[in-house]
Image (cartoon, rainbow, N blue to C red; front, side):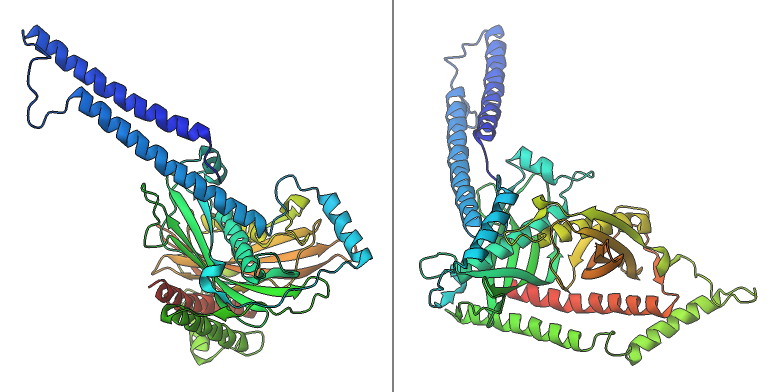
Length: 483
């Protein structure tokens, strides 16, 4: 995420090219005046005419401003990179996986424990952490993020969001000197990731994260992604907003570890915390009424009954044919798509587990492929709904991702895809569920209505419907937090 001297040289070349064009135009005008018998040097300039000297001076001033601005951006990028490296959730480039495993083994054998410093009150601004994605200025970086349509790969951005959330958590938990505390942070849940406007490849972006709520061992982290203007300032309206829940564990015992409490400086910060508490209460209410514990409510039963009636209206007279598919509809069980991957050390975090952002990226890419087949067009990512990381995934695990379109709203041209992640245990030939992601997409074309056929598919449909409704509420609360 850095701009090299090559990029600055390219800017110099563009400025020089513009200067050459201006000089060529001035030369053409001079030749025409000479043919007409006019003296170029003696002719006084018109009131609105710009001389070559003025053009040259203007270009030099413009070039100087560009150099100064990009120098400032270089400094910001370098500072943000140093901060991410200090509070990193990734091992970093060149880290030896086997050496890290050996060091952890030696530390555990020696039982070398670093004493923890006293807790300190931290302000929201103390946890503020920034990262940059300069797609416009760094062509090498843009190449890594570009998709086949010329847009930005959202899966790669999801990885960056998870990495930044970890850095914010470690920064908030640091002691009074800014040193790391002997705690381990894991991404417990993602409340919501809303994409409010499309990301452009010829634009620089700033990612800004900060703590907005702190419990005993958990914290809520809000992240914004904003476009940078040519003057180097972030736009007022964010392109993307996200919320992460991080949980602290003692590095040596694995038990819950208390983290630094939050000091609220003004009414704005108290409002942020209040909205975070409201989102948390909504999550608790949803978790308490899950379909795995309680049957569908009266409204949901009516929804299922209407779907059943729709299938009965087009039923044929064949014996044993209980239901037929309505027009512009697809059976839910026919929308399945899966993939399998092996987790290599390059996808690890500092805790030697699979990086959560890696799982989000693979799940998003599979859901995108499934959505393309479902709509027969290019789907557009809208949001990632609330989900939890139920279990950590070990390096070397074989993961199976299974996606399914569980809910659709043809009138709004939106649909939801659930992606389950299971670890395959080869010796026992069994699987263990680690995550279930819910992605919301839109399409410019017609979106088929997905219809459940079995009771299990009906529960999937209702769960997708609940996620869509709850997501709209959280999205509104997140919008209120930006005001």
